[in-house]
Length: 55
Ligand SMILES: [Zn+2]
Image 1 (cartoon, helix red, strand yellow):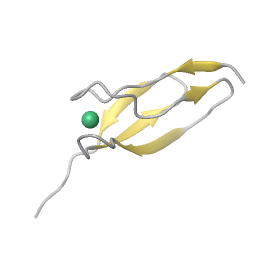
Image 2 (cartoon, rainbow, N blue to C red; image 1 turned 60 degrees about the horizontal axis):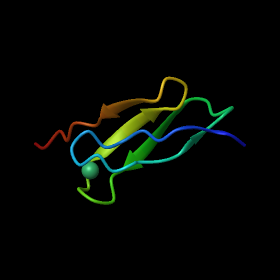
Image 3 (cartoon, rainbow, N blue to C red; image 1 turned 135 degrees about the vertical axis):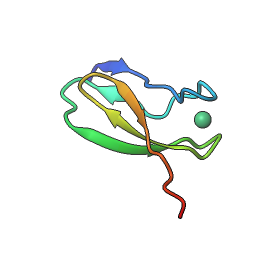
Image 4 (cartoon, rainbow, N blue to C red; image 1 turned 45 degrees about the vertical axis):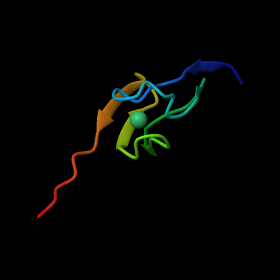
């Protein structure tokens, strides 16, 4: 499989996951460094922050 990209955490710039060719859909990833959670769109390599809805 060919690596398509490594979407990075917008805060600490650490790669969240590796995305390979043929990947589809959205995956949830948690940054192991800063603990922030994200959704990664494996088709566009877009990183979407999950906002914590603290009540
Ligand atoms: Zn991070």
